[in-house]
Image (cartoon, one colour):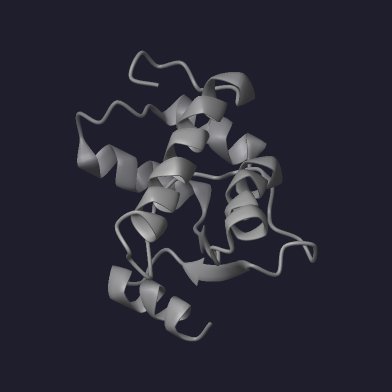
Amino acid sequence: MAAGTPLDDTSRAPWLDHLKQRALCSVIELGHDKVFMSCSALKQVYRDRFIELQENEGVKVIFIDLQVEEEELLRRMREMGGHYMKEDMVESQMAIREKPGLREPDVLPGDAGKEVEEVMALLEMV
């Protein structure tokens, strides 16, 4: 991505698997009762990789679907300045994004315009 090339499903798979293993390690080996991760699991198939933790390891998995308009994402990216992410990459991510459906009750909607603490409070309700 730093080279300006969006990841495809094949190149993203090892990264998602690494995140999944780190989460599992935090829960089982380090004894944490909660692990918060941030990643762009834009497709259901990506989210399903993490659901395997729940099905195979008994680790409860909850997603927060940060909802924001593409124009706002582009504005934020421009404000950051010097970030590797370019406008066309934001557009490509928005294009592949699959909104969670009824088959994904473990995905909570979250307003990306709120403070982090407000968004994380969603997890306290679960």
